[in-house]
Length: 442
Image 1 (cartoon, helix red, strand yellow):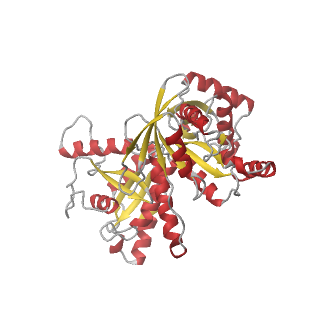
Image 2 (spheres, one colour):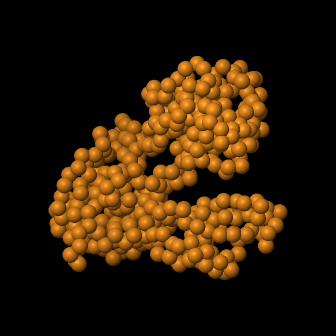
Image 3 (cartoon, one colour):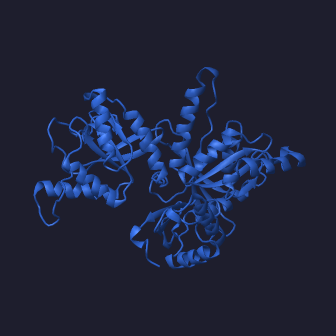
């Protein structure tokens, strides 16, 4: 099949053992890969044998058990087939199991470089018959098509919230990222936070080419102490000769910073018009699943007319971030800066909030009674059986239904969740699991 070859292609090095014979890979092995500024773990498995018996202990069945366990625990499965052979009976059995499991799958046809154009079209037509969506034909050995596949992998991982989990050290210290375009005052705010607050400062070197973290131990008014990991992203400016390159590395650095953070402070220059760059940064924060606090800097330098105009700009251009609280400050004078840690604590608490299942289902009953979901396919009623929270940081919920829910209704449920429970400053993830056996139940 070439699974291990593909793993090495993703990892950019020869981590997995590769030989021109089947069955070399037996145990699960993990390998780190990075693409588009996103880091993820690739798990290489042995071949999955259809019809394996859990109570038997032959080598093939043990390997199959390992592969199946890795599949069920993964955020995304790459089902790799040999394009030079075509779809086999074993492939059909694996596809059938994957369709039943409901696990997100990408269908990958390896060794596509060995096919003539007409043969390639025939194989891809056969692959569509597996019912797993669009096939991606490539050559893991030569790299043909691997970059396009990695683009899709990162997109799908982001869609299922795989990057929502912070990748910071497991030291329990929340990372606070300062995000904003150049000259917005990130460094001034960073220095103000480090220098004026009642803090103990400790510089911690980050990963190569990453910013230096600063640990701040802050004494609150009640005498308690909180420690934060401040991450400054100040630095990159556009150069006329390297605009695209600079923008790319700026995006990569922002994503790495967000991956290591729990809260993002999105700084806005009160004297400058909110533009496309702020919108892109806001989208990056939401996509990363981080709690967010809007900080309008240089507030002391603008008049009442500009302040009113800024409020309209925010309502119009950052409406998708209306759940984020806002703090007006002056990093230079220190005005309002001392209140930021209280805001950070609040959004952190909301970001980690877990609602008991009983309360959630009572809320769901009221929300559906107030506004029932639109009719589904063939005008059949959509029934939402129950809801449960599956994760925090950010809060993620799973709804169990008999049919697909419209995007507009999911937005309604998100709005009702925010009204009923305090989720200030945190994005919410609502997923839907469809159980067709509930179709005719009342």
